[in-house]
Length: 225
Length: 413
Image: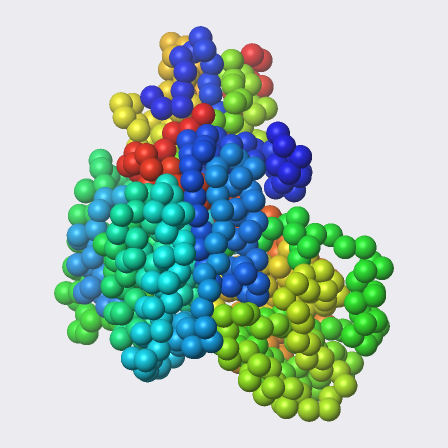
C-alpha cells in the first residue's frame, strides 16, 4: 500500500497537495449539468466530492460537495441542493455507482419540474479533476502509541492522504492508520474498530484530525500503553 | 539549503521548501524558458523574475525572455486583452498583420533558445503565436493566461485559439476562465513574493517618509488602491466610493497609485480622466509612479487602513494579495480572482458598486477591532495559499507531469 511500511519498519507520514485541471466543460442548465455529470471522467466526480476538503475556507461548508453547492447557488434550486448534499460517497462501492446515483437524482428533478432551471451567465458549473502529489515528510512512527501525540499536529494534506486518499488505494482501501494497526495482529483491534467509526465525508479535515486525535488519546489513556 | 531557500523556509515553513526540493529533484537540470511582453509594470513582470530565480535555486536551468514590439503591436495586443476580458473589440486586419509579423521576428531572434528548450512557458496572448514559428521545437510548450477570460470575444478567441490549441498544456487562474481546448488546462492562481521589495517588512520610519512625501496625514484614515490605470480596475468608481464614504467619515483620504505597463498603450489616457474626476480635492492623491516604485507601493499599502481593488474584471488581482499580506482587509470587486482571495467578513468584502464599497469602508472604519481581526486573517490566508512557494509547487507539478507522465498520482520522496 502506498506510503506505508510494515509494522517493523514503522509508519511513514506523507503529505499531499492537489493539482487541479479544468476540463474546459461548463453547464448552465440543469439538463446540461445532468448530461455532463453522466459523461465526465470518474476523476472529475471524485474531485467535486472530495477536492473541496483541501480548498481554502473559513466557515464550515454549507454543502459537502460541489454539485449540491452549485444547485443551491447557481441554479437556486434548494430541493435539488438538499438531495445532492445528502449523498454520502462512502456509501457507494465505486465512483460509477456514485455517478449513477447522481444522475438518478438529477433525472428525477428534471422529471418533476415544469421548466429547466438555468444559472445566470457567469455562474455556470465548471468541471475539473485533480492530480494528487504525494510528499514524504521524512517523519516515521515506530509504535502506534505515538499516534496520540503526532496526529494533532498533522497537516491537512497528511490527513487527506492517510484517511481520504487511502480509501481509494488498492488493495485494502481503508485508511492508512487502520492498515498499519492490522500489521500488529489483534493487539490494536479495538483501536482499529474505533477508527472505523469515523465518517470522513461530512466533516472538515480539521474536525477529522480532532476526531482521530481524540480516539487515539482516549484509547492510549485507557490502555496505558 | 542555500541562504535563499532558507529565507523562504523561515517565511513559508521548512516543510513547504522541502516539498519544492522533492518536486525539483524530478526536473533538475531542465532547460526552461519563460516569455512575456513586458519587463516592467503589471503582475506578470513582477512575478516572473522571482519564479525564474527560485527555479534556478532549485537547480533548474530557467530563464526569462521579453519579446519586443512596436506601439502598433501593443495596440493590437491590448485589443486582444480587452476582448479576452469580454469587451466588444474589432481588431483591424492591419493590426493582426503587425501581430503576426512581430511574433515571426521574435521567434527568429529567440529561435536557438526556444527550439532546444525542454519546457517553454508563453505568458498571455502577446507571444502566443511564437509556437507556430518554431515547428522543430523539442520540448513541451505551455500557454499561461493571466487574464479573466470567462467570456472572451468570440472572434478574438477563435483567432487566438488557433495558436493556443497546439500547445501541450495551458494554465488559467480560475476554472471559470478555462476554455474547451484539446490539452490539459491546469488551474494555478498566481502569487506574491514575501521577500521582494513590494512585500518585505518595512521600518515605520520608511512608511512615515512616504506619507510625508505625498502629503498624507497619519492621523486620518486612508483608503488605497494600487493599480495600473485601466478601465477594468474602475479607478473612477473608487473615487465615487471615496466621496460617498467621506459623508460618513469626513477625514478620509484616498490614494490611487499606479504606473503604466510598457505593453499598455491606454494607461496615460485613463490616468488623465482620473485626474480630471479627482479635480481639486486635496484628499485625493492620484499618483503616477515609475515602474520600479516597489518600496513606495509597499509603504503606501502599509500606511493604508483599507486596501481597495474595485475591479470590474480581474484575472487575479495581485494587489489584493499584497494588501492582505500587509494585514489589511480588502474591499474588492466581486469578480474573477478577487473572489478567491476576499472572503466576506473574514478577509474583506466583495462589492459590486461604489455604494457597496463606501458602506463597507464606513463599517470597517467604525469597527477598528474587526478591521484588525480581518487584517490578521487576511495575512494568514495569503501565507497558506498565495505565496510564491505554493505557486512554484504547482508549476513544478505541471513540469513533472508533462515530462514524466504518471497519470493522476505523483509519489515523491
